[in-house]
Image (tube, one colour):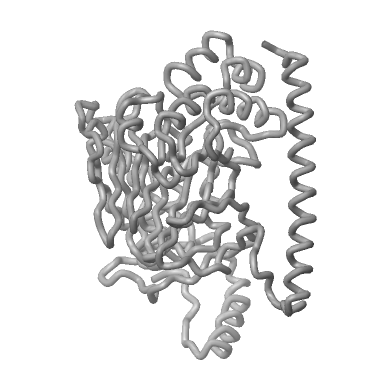
Length: 422
């Protein structure tokens, strides 16, 4: 279907008008609330008592609170607006977990301004590019971005899957691919961040505990999306989060995610949308959204059967013209609370309920400081650039470099010497 029906066009226009009216009403309400607070003695120069958006790093997480951020809500097709699958879970006990790390998510993770020393636990549902492509970049740039602790990653393996497809094999190849980068940094900077701890979980096991520490339990469920794919359930402090990678509706999810506090599940395009927006053939479209992914109708039926306290639909291009179609399809089957994820959408989850906002991030951020003092690894041999390469250094620049060092040592109280060779 290359054009939408008149009904779809009319419904879309009406829905957009409703959204615009609602937004205006909310803004007006916010002004009224602020005016009311001012009349009650609120400070005209102080911070608002209730922020309508989330500014990362400005709000303390309560000891019994969970915060979830959609770092990537979209698809493998690159776009500036949405990165591929990646969700950050922050807990009031100080733990942080990343579920999937698809292409485009790397920059968005850094935009949150969180020290990488806190972001040392990454869980991968399956090794498709849109669920783990940026893991390599995140790992390999750890030293430059001030991670001072090893990176721990969990991914699928076993279950009869070919050994060359296992997560450990994938991580081994990743390290080998970047051997030059690791080798040339040796002895120059702190390379602790290059230490990688890989844990494989058996993706075929149902409700299988794959992580348990500090009051947090993470379990895996098999997914129906080829082999070697899974979904996760995180439990902490009486709260329960469910996160699907790519999957068809399945009995394991339906059994073990009943009534969870927040249920994050993929929600693909309809077949007609796949043909129009992705330029898929009819065969590609119908197969993609009915045999290996959950379309809006599948998503809605899963939510209706599991009745979560709050549902989140992700894994589709969320635009002004696509959202109304997705919403129509979902609402025909499911009438519970549901958010349609965008990048930097934020959920604060407590036993009292879930609050949804959008984060406002800094597009010009720099790496946060490490939590531990950085040091060059003891016994590490500094990499030496070959003499044939150093022969290209113009001697006229010796004086320039020496002055830079003299000025720096005077300012910092150091005694470094300029030397191209060890």
